[in-house]
Length: 156
Image (cartoon, rainbow, N blue to C red):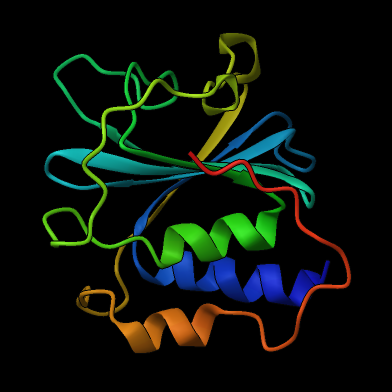
C-alpha cells in the first residue's frame, strides 16, 4: 500500500470536517477513528492498520453510540486506502443515491469499550463549504493503476 495515498485521502477526509479520535497512547495509538456527524446519521471510519479498516453509516438516534451501532445503512471492510476511497465517494445523506438499507452491522463496526481509553480528540472543521459529492470527485479518488493484489473486500 502507498502511505502517501492514504495520507492524501486522510487530508481529504479532514478537509470535509468531522472529528478524529486516536485511541491509545497519544504517540502510538492502537486505533484511529473519524466520525462525520450529519443531522440524521454519522459516517464512521475505523483505521486499525494499513490493511485493516472499516467504514459505515449509522443512524444517530438519541442516546446512540456511533462506535457501537445497532443498525447501519452501509458498511465496508478493506485495507485503509480502499476504505477511505469508499467513504469519500459515499453519497451525502438525502441524495437520491445515498444508501437507505437497514443492515445488521458486522462485528468489525464495533469499537470495544476497553480500546476507548486513553483517547485524544481532534475536531476538524470544514476548510471550505461542503459540496455534494459528484462523479468527478469519484474519478479523482479512484486509483490510477490496478492494485498489485486483489483487495479483500467485504462490502455489505
